[in-house]
Image (tube, rainbow, N blue to C red; front, top):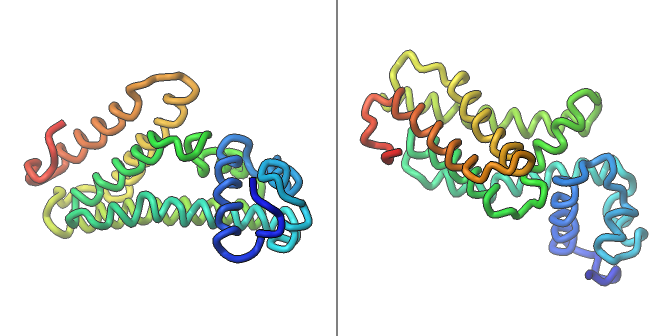
Length: 209
C-alpha cells in the first residue's frame, strides 16, 4: 500500500505505473481508470490527478512506461550479446525469459492492449502501434546486420525473418496462458533457433538446438 502523501517524484510515479502496466496486462487499458488504479494502490484518486489529469494522459503514460520496461528488460540486455545472429537470438530468448518471469500477470502488455485498440483510432492506438513498429524495426535491423556481416545468406529477407520471429514469440502468451501448454516457450525457442541455423552461413556461431 502506498500513502497518498508520497505521490510525488519520479520514483513514486514509476511505482504507480509499474502497477498500472501489471493491471493493464490483464484488464486492458479501457477498464483501467484513475479510480480503479487508486483503489488497487490504496491511495486517493486526487493524488493520481496530480500526475495525470485525465484517463487518456494516464493511458499514454502507461504505454510509454511499458515500452521503457520492454527496452530495459529485453532490448538493452540483448544488445550486450555479440553482433549479428547471436544478438538476434538473444533478443528472442530474453523476450521468452520475460514472459517466464511472470512479471506481468497477463503475460504481455502489448498483446493485451494491441487487440484492444487495433480498431480504435486515436493517440493511444498510435502509441501502441509505434512501440510495436519500433520492435519490428529492431528485429529487422538486426537481421539485416547479420546479412551484412555475412552470417545470414544474402537472399535472406530481414523483414520476413523479423515477422517469423515475432509470430513465434507472440504465440507463446496465448499457448501458455490460455491453452496451458507448458512447453510453448521451449517450442518457440527451438523454432527460431532452427530457422536461424537454416539461414546461417555458419551455423556453428549459434548454439545447438
